[in-house]
Length: 550
Image (cartoon, rainbow, N blue to C red; front, side, top):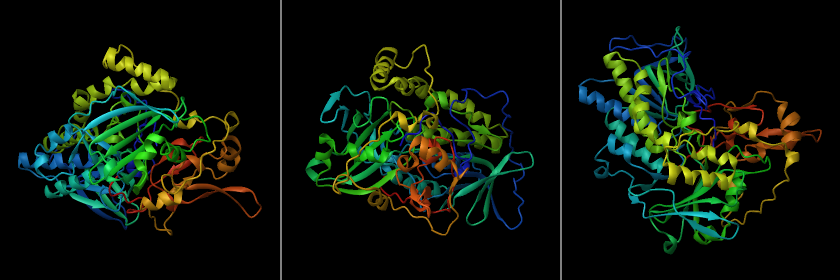
């Protein structure tokens, strides 16, 4: 799945947008200046009868690359200054890494800065990129093009395994990491300064003098396979564009050879696609039937399946990341480099910069504004500025997009005198059903392609059946009154877990039924619904997918 033009962070997974795509590249004049904190500042308390409160200097929401990098950097600074700050990291997954999904070619630049000796510390980064190919697919052919990627010195990894390792490093430094705790509410004091978060299932408030939101938006539609020994080429990287997507739909695929005969394979589909009959899940199954792909997978076994959205608005969509009481870091703020198809290194660096600003705010009494200032001076800013025109170039279609991208890379080299703009938001891009013909997808064969229940089983997804529903309709009449007659019920197709389906009621009339227990937490519904009628809220902690090798 591909989240386009809407780089908004969920307020601690509560579905409340703190910032949105299209934010200006400087602090808006109306935005309140971040306050200062000194070492003697009083604890920020949320006084709520009946709620247990745990107080920390810093609360970080999300144990992904950005959140853990921030936690590690904070504790490193504490050791260097011979002081101490209490740091807590909350993770809604049942364990660290359970909700982290990304076929990943890892650029170690940020990790080199954070943990310079990581190569001697048994990090799960063992497979260097050995080859780098770029294919243009037609229905039956794979045409090799010059690779626009430079992956020399990068590694093919499992991101879920990397964050598990990072969590152990954070704990060794004294960070408290709490998996299975879903932050559902932002806490404020009487001056509307953020003072922490609350969990919805166990009634515990985590108060902090500074809160960092790192609930990223990172992933794709992907599987991890175990393939035959003779077909496995550790470190081999392949990216494709073209088939099965039409020329107006942005997207592409990846095939990354890990170790132990494992292959990460995935398809990215931009959610600003027009045809309401398009099903990203079925496009992925269709992609695997391509002759060049099928022969690689035949004889293999699927180990895991998953899906998540990407925020790929890039430089034009970076929000002002500082708010009174904290900051937004990582992919929550949209630091994905689209032409590189990488965001882990930028997410980690943003967490480190936020940690440095946090330390100075708490120990030296400076402002969190320093995070924003240093972000604009960092290599993140330079990298994303150079890459700013690649994604919006494809608003004009595949061939014009590739031509403009080539111009950016080989002629302007990231220094073009113009900045392209993005198109309309994803949900507004969906056409009426009468403008398109239904798409007939082939039935799954059970060997290379699979039905949704089979794939869902491989995601290890689980939610308690008696918990309150976390997927809510703002207007219960819109599905039958608008979505079904005008858009042919697109929610039954854009969801990669078939959470939404239309069933007949007692009168034989179609009625939307929500299978919330199937939810992969990809949040595509919150983005793509034509009338923005679906609100994704945080379920109980520990629920959702259970990724181990994604």
